Amino acid sequence: MFDCGKIAIIGGGSWATAIAKIVVGNTHHIGWYMRRDDRIEDFKRMGHNPAYLVGARFNTDEIYFSSDINEIVQAYDTLIFVTPSPYLKNHLKKLKTRIREKFIVTAIKGIVPDENLVCSEYFNQVYDVPHSNLACLGGPSHAEEVALERLTYLTAGCSDLEKAQALADVMESDYIKTKTSSDVIGIEYSSVLKNVYAIAAGICSGLKYGDNFQAVLISNAVQEMSRFLDAVNPIDRCVYDSVYLGDLLATGYSNFSRNRVFGTMIGKGYSVKSAQIEMEMIAEGYFGTKCMKEINRHWHVNMPILDAVYNILYERISPQIEIKLLTDSFR
Image (cartoon, rainbow, N blue to C red; front, side, top):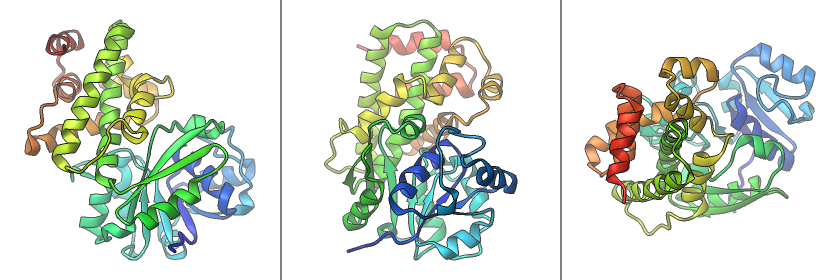
């Protein structure tokens, strides 16, 4: 049986903190790479992340912190990457240690900009990590709710289902239920697209469209997602599973969703820049929209919602005009 061995978290944000809480609760030891020494010192002193999910308490005796990514990579067997996708390349540029033999888990719900690759593809193509050593975590999972130990369902994806099960076992707890899947690419792309659709839902909310239309928007979004997933990875999947539709619903409707909040601000008339400044957090869907638009130039899938969000965010077309055109295409 595969064993995840010693596990390390790469990243210091809210989702990284939530995953760390889950893992250390089961293993009672993790490594944790954070790039800022001052944050590490504050964390050790206060017993919680000083910047994110401050209500989540930790026994810091169970955590080995380091701001040196090479030290963590050398010492740990399973590396769970939870950095914002726009910053992943900058963290990995510091690597002097081979990661090909490590078990790499991506909990990043975004695409690597410029490369236009989901994270598992990036690790495979750039760092030669075999697909059997690449896994992902997906599912409807707001970090804030995990920190509050509210019931959450996660899916561990890996082409090697034995390794997927080992990861699922590490994540399982009283408040975390898990299942496995071999559809790594599908899970990763759906987790990118649901951020785009959450921005669309937020824009419509900011424009005062009601619940009736939001339901139609999300219904069309899941159809659009299904068309794209079938094009890029045509396997037998049920897009209504929690890792696909469930994640879309949580991100599209919840006030915890930074992508929905970002979209709402755009719908209310904020510029992209002013919305980003006021949020002080990364809305992954902003970057994901541009990447998905460029990726779809290869696949030519009919994706009117993606196109509408792209036109609003990058072509500066009026949200009122663009969403009206979108509503005319729905039935």
